[in-house]
Image 1 (cartoon, rainbow, N blue to C red):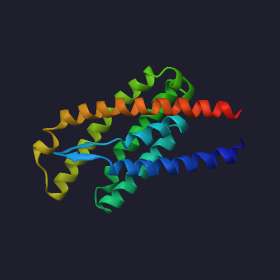
Image 2: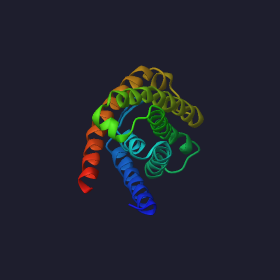
Image 3: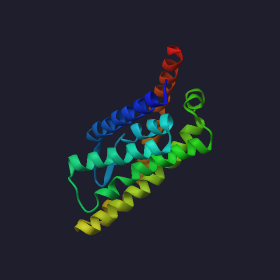
Image 4: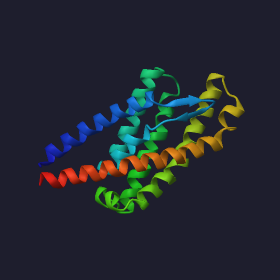
Length: 183
């Protein structure tokens, strides 16, 4: 495959992952200051397949598309898209620094699960800070809705990180198997 073909495939895949992000955002559940969502799945998958920059882009553009469709552009739109983008950047950089490739993740995924679990509280803290800023700016700040459920938000972040890592692992294995079969 030529470099141009690989780049085209990468860009097209990123576009599909951004669309999956938006679809998953509609399948999320929000209640009492807590959001249960699997939007991190396409971001993490992109981090494994293409690295930190592509994962950052999928997180930013997926989050931006979600914000624009659901809420329109506000003073805090750009802040709301940062947590998932940071997750993608963190996971992609961590996997690269730990020399974890898609092949190694498909075979032995303990390090991958650990990286996803470390990224979870980082994302939860960023989401909470953005929530607190947004609530203060727009006048709906209530301590119990933001900080009172912080522990629940972090716990759910760990749970969704486990679910996401468990879902991404067989996808990576299948993609690797498919690539070997084409040779």
